[in-house]
Length: 239
Length: 189
Image (cartoon, rainbow over all chains, first blue to last red; front, side, top):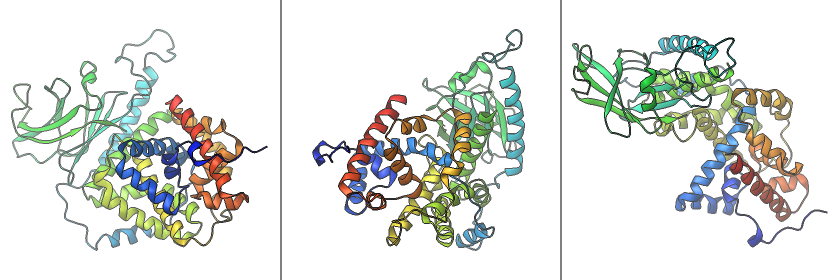
């Protein structure tokens, strides 16, 4: 026998889930949307529901849009591409780096201690749990950020492009953790850079830590601390 | 191996999205190349009409272009953020039509057909099948209603109509389902 409908007071408050799923319509939806603005706890709840439900996006079948749609979209952004700030994004290079990185990762994982090693455990970086997330940061102002991605699996940091530096200077990447002290991570090439952080320093690179780029003399800061202007900073977060 | 490919792709997508936020057109086209099939699949299913889905997808990428700078890496994965925009925009369109939708869509790609494969892949990719597990704990009609709301974008009123039950009744058992689902998800989180 189907249960009787509950009176409104007895029903659980699942408005956040109802809103995230799209069950609500009309006035009920308007009320829930207003709650999102007025109640931070409710907004966080909606966000949590969206995160949970996002697992279902993986099941969503793909479909190919018409081939010329991207050109139509591009055209409606304004006929001429806006003037670039700095260099164009180095896609081909990033793709090469990504491929190389994937190959390295395969090796690292194959050799990673903690797995089922054939024979004795090989020497290597300290084991990191398989669930350690990639961390990313957007450095600099919102209009022209530099993207950085840290992969805890192998300690690599990819940086998309360095900010402009004068001819005899170089951009240097730093991490600033909870102690507020900058530690050098490496020098950045003008285009995409792949840095590998020594195992001992990797613990500093965590969600919430700050990445910073300073302009230094060729060869990097002579003192081990930033000596030139800090041109971009950004916080690391898990993706 | 699956995980490596997934992580790598995710980081690449994050970089592309960040660059799009700085109004990099080349990055935007790359973002489109990586994500348009997924987002079009979402629009097509919810709109139930190819032409409407194309218009919605067009809008979605204009929204993405404008809002990319506001994406916060820590809050949602890039694809979740993008897919949510597409789903919400498609639902807005569908709500503005209002006439149809008492019956299931016939034109759209079928979720059920592709589900077993995709489900297996999902589990293999990162083991995050919590939602699937928790949905299985619900009564059949509850989990089906929740899936239908997610994939078809139907409201309480439309669901009640499809099932031929009073609105209040449909709301009651779906709300209980949602409460149970939430409890299960929070427990697993």
